Length: 231
Image (cartoon, rainbow, N blue to C red; front, top):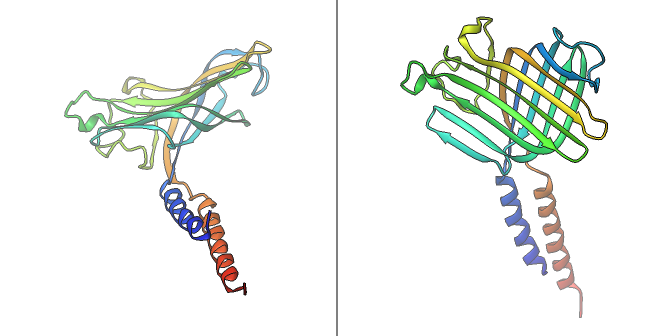
């Protein structure tokens, strides 16, 4: 490949990579564990976890995701990519970083022209291998329209304190499960959400684009030097 060809390739690759800005999506819920189905793995310590406080944070980006959107009433995506799940129970934190399935969606029932339409915010991740399996999801749904007429957008920052009125919420639950297939032990629990938030940031472009430009410039400089050398 000639220096000029390489330089042109670097410019094209740089433009392509710079335009591929991924959006990093994060959802966080906090609350109290209400049910424990199994705790033989002791991921968060032995004993009964019921009544202990938890925090769940799920993070992934939209690279390669399928994106569904309808006006300002619904926004959702799902796909297969690297994700992270940070789970804290009673001060003990476990961080899981795997490649698996993810999903996030919001719905704004207040704009649907239906007085009984519900607002929803949900996110979940899961993966399964021969050695282990894990899932984590959390979401809230209410006819009280916590989006307050705003767009149901995954990229619009959103935070709410869940009201304790059980009748206003169709769903306000977080669930987590981790299974060690080799030992047959697992930790599985669900919790009542008290706070729920969503945020999104645009990822910084990979430095690869700058590297390609640098290599292209060096190649051009080398070509110029060679043309100045006597035959």
